Length: 419
Image (tube, rainbow, N blue to C red; front, side):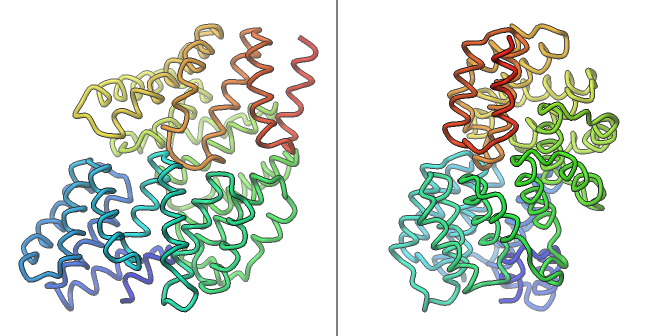
C-alpha cells in the first residue's frame, strides 16, 4: 500500500498518508499498527498516548485480523509498554514464519540499531541473505537492512556489495544510500563517500529527518579528512538551519559540533543556540541515545542548570520500571552525565574515571559505530586533560586500529607526544 511505501522511503508525509488511508478504511488493522509504530518512532513521550489509541483501535479489530496482523498488534502493545525486547521477539517470530514481511523486517532492524545490538543486526542480515533474492518484490529494502547489519559488524565487502545492489533495485530508498555511506566512512574512503552522496536534487525532497542525517554523513567525511572549515560551512548553511527539530536533528548537530570542538575548532555561540533548542526536547525524552547527545550539548554550552536537570531525570528514569533502555541509562547514560559534570567543574581525573569504567558498555548508547565513536573521542580527550598518557595512548590506538585514516585522531598523537 502507498502508506507502507511512504514509510519505507522515509517520506516526511508517511503519517499523513496512513491517516488518509484510515479515513477511507478505518477497519484496516495493519494501518492502525503502522500508525502506532510511526508515532513511537518519533521518540516523544507526549505521543505515546496517541500510539496507545492506535493500539486500542487495532486490538478491537484483532478478532477478524490475519494471524500475522495479530502478531504485529502484540508487538505494538509491547512497544507501547517500553518492552522493546519483547517486541523484537515478536517481530522475530513473524519473520521466522514469513521472512518477507517488510514491516517486521524494518522495525526490527531499526530497534536493533537504536538499542545498540550489533549481534542482532548481524543475525538479521544473515537471515535476510538466506531468505531473499532479487526477484522477490521489496528485495531492495531488505538488502539495505542487510548492508547495515554487515557494516556494523565490520563485514565491509559484503556490506558494500549488497548495499549497492539495494540502491539499484530501490533507488528511492535512502537506507541503502545511508548504509553504503557507513561502509565508506568506516574504511576511510572519504572521497568515494562524498561522490556516493551526490544525487539529483529531486531525490531529497520531502525526506525530513533522514535528509538531515545524510547531510551529517557528508560533513563527517569532511571532518575525518580534517577539512574543518568545510564542516563548519555544512553545519551553518545546512544542518543548523533545519526547520524541523527532533532528537534526531539534535543528535546530528551535537555529534558534529562536539567533534569539531574536540579537534580544536572553537564553535562559540553555536553551542548556546543549540542548547536553547535542546531544552525544548527535555519533556519529550524517550531514548538514552538522545539523552547522551543532549548531555553533550549542555556540557559544552556550559549550561550547568540543564545538565544537572537532565542528569537527575536520567537517574530517576534508570530507577524506574526495568526495560532495555532504563538499563542502558544506568550502564552508560549516568556515567556520561557524571563524567561531563566532573569535566565542567574542572575535575578531569573524576571525569575520566567515570567514563573509562563504563567503556565496556559504550554499545549500550545505541546507534551506529559512527555515532558511538563520539564516546571514544570524549574518553581520549578526558584522559589527555587528566594527564593520563597511558590511558590516552591506549584509547587513541584503539580508535586508529578501527579508523587509521582519521586526521583528527592522528593529530592527538602529536598532543600526546608533547605531554
